[in-house]
Amino acid sequence: MSKSLSSQQWETLMKGFEKHSLLLFKNQQLTPEMQLDFLTRFPHDIQAVKEGKNIAPFYKKMPGYPPLLSLHGYGSFTHYGHKFTLPAGEVFKYSHVWHTDFNSISDTPPVVSAMYAVVVPTKGGETLFCSSIKAYELLIPELQKQALEMKVCYCPTINFKVEPQGRRRIDDVEASMKNFNPPEVGRIQPVVIQTKKGKNALFLSVHSAGKIEGMEAEASQELIEKFLTPGTQPEHIFSLKWEVGDFAIWNNREILHSGTPWHLYENEQRLMHIFFLDSTEKVTPAS
Image 1 (cartoon, one colour):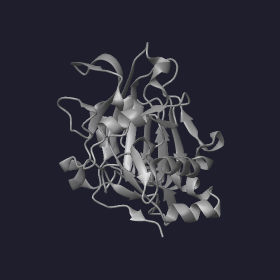
Image 2: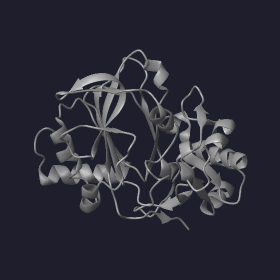
Image 3: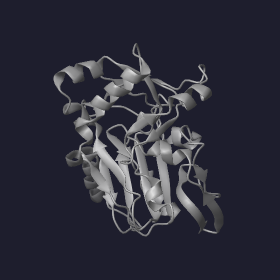
Image 4: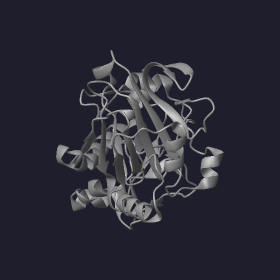
């Protein structure tokens, strides 16, 4: 990746991305400039990226680089001449359940997300991936029909804990009610979208799913769990144990992903470059 790829190599790479929705490049030695150059050759909305349409305010930025590049991790670092500390906090909690990047706060979530490993712990810190297309296909017909008819009301003020496995949400109802501000509601999104491939895909972010329209919150969470369970079984998950120089790029509208508990490596450090290629294209609800 540090060398220029021929047009034929790029064509092969794009076909792989189209087929698998996730690419992993191992053992790369890339500067931030190289990472940005490589990633922005993937299909994206140039103007949306330039405007920083989906810049996450909860991620630290690196001075001197485009806001497309964010820093994600835990620990104190000197990185490209800059000293900074990344404390464990909300960003970890919210990434440790199954989610689609930005679908709870934007009607035009990124098509492409990516992460590059700079510092990794000796244990823990895996990222889990599964196909949101396969997750829909694995549902029994009754649940497929229900999912097609439903929308989720997202709310950014929800408080919750995470089960030890790091992928299931347990609501902290009392804390949520204290912080709940009715006008502060995120997007109302379909449970299922139609992808560019013409296939249906689950489109969920567990961390801020308030409730399904027309249902109570508790019943909504139970149903969302039913939607997610078949496609997130171990045999359908790719668990990425990060190594320095790993560069993972995925289709954010076709892949669900989840972090794993940070307390497994709380005595170590982890530093990732994280990217979101913005879009102005709204998702298409499945029918």
